Each structure stands twice: as C-alpha cells, then as structure tokens.
Length: 311
Ligand code: UDP
Image (cartoon, rainbow, N blue to C red):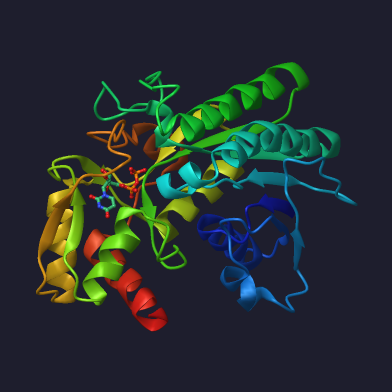
C-alpha cells in the first residue's frame, strides 16, 4: 500500500509511520511541525519507502500518484498545545479533515480518522462506550479540541454516507511512550521530567481524577488492525486499567526513586478536566481481537529510559 499519514512527525504519527514501513508499505508523511518534530522521524532519513513533506494540511493537499490509505493524525493533542494553538486546532480538525477526506475520495483510498476520548468530554457514563454521545462544554478551554474532533467525526461519516468513502474512526484514549515531548504538558512527561530532576510531582486538583494509560505500541497495533478491518463505526482504543492521578504520581516516584514527593497545584485548565476516564473496549475486543498487552510498569520504565537518555 501507499499510505498518506498526516502528523507524521508527531508522537503517534511517527510510530505509525514506522509500523507501516515495517509491514512493507510506502509512507508519505506530512507535518507542519508546529507540535511535531523531525527528530521523531530522523531515523527514517534515506529510507526509500518514506517520503516527508513539510506541509500544513489545512491547505489543499495535492499528492501525485496512487494513495491506498489516508491516516489523519495531524493535530495539537495535549491540553497545553491546543490552548496555545486554539485556532490551528480547530482548523486542522475541520479544514484539515476535509482536505484529507478529499484526498481519500479522489484516490479511492481508505480513510482513518484519529479521534479521541475527549469527544466524550467530562463523561457522565463510565466506562465510556462508543454509543455514549458525550458531555462537552463547547466554550470551555477544551472545547477547541473536543469540538474540532467531533466535527471531524461528523464529516468523516458524511463522506462515508454521501461519497461512499471507506472510513474508519479510532477514539484514542490517553497514550504514552517514547517520542512524547518532555514539555507537552501532559501528565506522563510532566511527572517523569519532574521525577528525573528530583522535583516534586505537580498533582492538579486533589489527584482523585482518573485516567487509564495505554502504551504506544499497543495503540499502534489497534489502529493497524482497525484500518485493515472492514468496520466503519468508531472504535475505542485504550487501556481499560484505570487509576487516579495521585496513585500514578506515587508510582512514578517509586519507579524513579524520586525523594521529592508531590505538590498539589491548581491547574489553570482545571475547569473541564474530566474527572473520570476509562475506555470500554468490548468493541475492539470483539471486532479486532485486540486488547492491550503492555502493563503500566513495563511501559513506564521504557518511557523513563527514553526521557533519561534525552535529559
Ligand atoms: N495532571 C496533573 N499534573 C500534571 C499534568 C496533568 O495532575 O503535571 C493531571 C490533569 O489535571 C489530568 C490528568 O493529569 O487530570 C491527565 O492530564 P493530561 O494533560 O495528561 O491529559 P488529559 O487526559 O487531561 O487530556
């Protein structure tokens, strides 16, 4: 296959590029590098099957030759990033998705949208199943990301129904691993960075809010299976093992032998911080035969090793 991956220099886009190349496909990677970084794809320089184009996909996308699949992963994705780039976030979710769908339609390619657990907002249903419609504050701080992704899902389904484009939607829950940016503001790099500098970990609020963390290789496996499947409805991919942020902080401190403890902080983003989040992955299990295999202890150690090398 010849595959277009938008956001290819990002955390997930770069791991996906690696996976498609390993499977023998050709990858065209696109990224405007506002939150992505070419360091993530530096190891692919000189690879005949990888072609990188620095480009902002909110503009009309022209690709020469055949394309068999389009994977739309371009977007700021951490709360700090989408608060810094609110308009770009809305544009890449709306205009970028429209353009990426346009490529898929013109080339007769399959299309896969990177959606998110954020479309469930601060959920009133727990764990979250794909048929839950969500609880999103449109004008809250997270609204720019949540609504962009909700629009992206809507236009993806419209292209499927109206133009017959063969589409897939993955709803990605918190994912971590090597190639996250140390300064992207998310809890995993924040805590690991602080721990490795022997600083107290900044727990926002009282730390009772929950998340469930999926290691990146598990996520990539789920996405690959979804693309290859015949299933055109949204699928949650994430790790259902849930913990509070406070428990997670203790785990990071124990693993890194950080003596500095924790400090409670008011998060400026706190309004709208989802209080619980855990994917119901019944659909992924049944349809893709997928479930995560890397436990948090193992994945965390690999991520710590990665950041340690870079600090
Ligand atoms: N969080 C925290 N300390 C930090 C960074 C994040 O306590 O230094 C909390 C944050 O309030 C949220 C959770 O960790 O409840 C996950 O935040 P993250 O930014 O990783 O992503 P989110 O899941 O909110 O999109």
